Image (cartoon, rainbow, N blue to C red; front, top):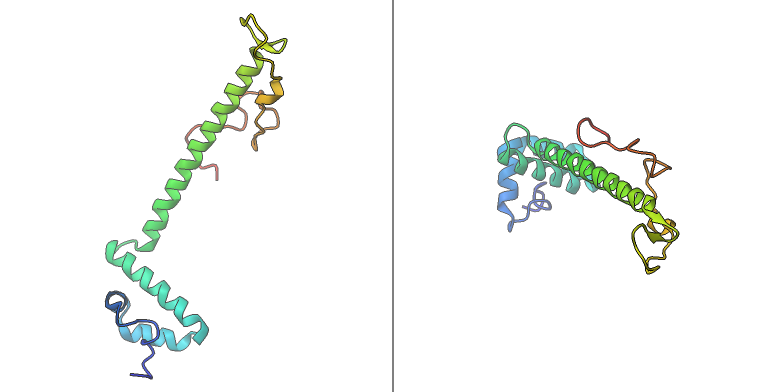
Length: 145
C-alpha cells in the first residue's frame, strides 16, 4: 500500500529483514517508532533495528552488545600483541646499537657493515629513549587503552 510506513524501508526482496524486526520488536512498536522519528532519520532507524534484530536472533541475551564486546576484547588483545612486538623491536634495535663498534659489528673483520647506529633507530610513541629499558612497555595484564 502506498501509505504503508514500512514500504520504503522493507523492500519485498528482503522479507527476512522485516520478519526479524517484527519478531524481536513487534510491528506496532516499529510503526510507533517510525512515526515519532523525523522522515530523514527513518532509514537509519530501520537499519539499526534490523541490525539489532538479527543480532538478537543470533544471540538472544546480548544481541549486538555481545558482538561489540567480542570485538573490543580482540582489539585489546591485538593492541597488547602490537605493544609487545614494538618492545621487542626496540630491544633488538638497542642490542644492535650496542654491538656496533667503529661502524662495524664486533667480530667483523671487514668494514662491509658501515651504517651508523642511527640507521637502526625506530621512534617509539611510548618512550623518548628507546634504550632506556622496558619503561612504558607492558606485556599482558591490565587494560592499557
